[in-house]
Image (cartoon, rainbow, N blue to C red; front, side, top):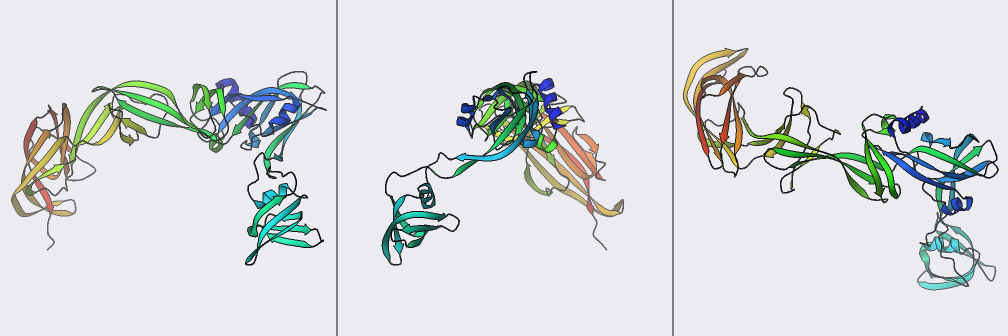
Length: 461
């Protein structure tokens, strides 16, 4: 199933596949094998890479070093000639000598085993030395067995060694082995060179979609969608790339739009951003202030309420990729928000909340003018009626025109609304919304009055 999927992905979607990390480069060159990646499909948790090359066979067999990041069950091999068939392939673990230098006393002694050495070491409160031949090094317990010239044997802990003197030519290469994976291939005919293609999935390289919204004026924004690629696999140079917004290891199949990304060059350990799509959209800017019904403002004092800055796009869906969140940048390229952005199916708009607008002020002044002792019932609850006279005071302290919607929720009955739109709130019995829409030039003020009777819970008898 996975093999069929990979071939289908390459044929239908030009998906790219896996690469070889040449741990055993010298061995490959000795065999005359050249195998290189040519296409890559980046998923959000791994990458599928396609590589091709000429494989050097001897006695119908060949060994190719592989990347340790390879997911073995995802390998698919195809012979590029009709003259022979691939009989089998299998993976095995192997190792090659490290090219690193020795890093501790244990490695020094292992690399120079059998040579005449002099060890300077701590012997209680004194420093002593002994010359002989290193016979056994136990790296796990940190212990050296040294055979002296008089047939005596010395057990010396690594921690006590102060100096090691090699008599003769010293070896400074670490004795460590570097593990790697080898793929063994078998074909049905004795051919020295066979062109082959391989498709497989590798961990260590992935991408995530990132969205940006750049405000470029009073009516337009630039919606930018980019790919951020993290490469911990290997150096990639000028490889054709595609991006798929799904998780191949988790989901097990292609599930998302595939986007061409052109040529990709990225070094191991690098993080790279790639532009995918830019869309210019018209928007309308508005400010909104909501005063809840239970706000404590009837003390006769002036109370200021926060004004939210909102941008609305007249589109029903987002173009391109679906990003979890968008970075919002103002006209000076400063990030002012990082927010989710999803279509609103109720009105066919995308709504962007930019946070509080400090330069548009909404103040409320409410005063109780009458209280009634009469008890009224709303459902199972008992209330007293309180008459309130109120005033809204608006001020645009900014340097640009502002449209603002103010909503005052009340639990009671509206007496005078000064042209406000009054709406019931079915989800909250007894609560109504007074809604005003204002246009404020820079530096301008606006004042409206309203009156309502609030329902206040009656005291228990």
